[in-house]
Length: 160
Image (cartoon, rainbow, N blue to C red; front, side, top):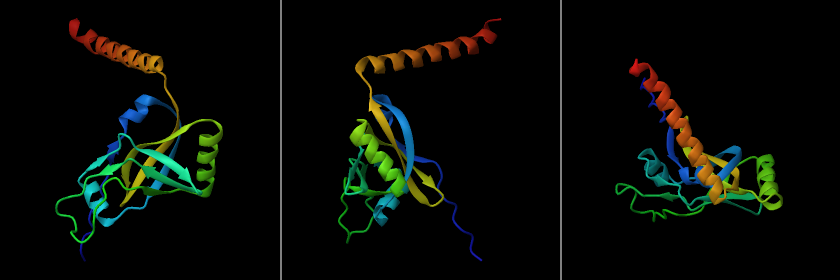
């Protein structure tokens, strides 16, 4: 009996800019409708999420702005569109919650990361409020202060 291949694990790509530009409130896990060449490219981590966002229309969620670079060894009879809109698979309850928050409360819906869940690709999307420039500076100051504190604690034992 043949051994089964191990499932790829871990994060494929993260959208660090979204975490920098938004206060993340609620996170959701969504499946994706992908083509075969896209999955092959994702196994090689050929994904960019920098300007990706979620569009809610007609009761469906679509991911726009994500870029999957096609492999040179991918199929030649399929025309690969690297920035096509990709449908997100969510429950009706989750879709209703997302659309209500975006329309009524002024939240933005952004993609945070793509990762492997067993043999399937999942997308972590989030509702977030946009940060002002001073909020971004405050976050950076807090992060730097935390680093300095960790450095001081780590070096305290070495000085003695």
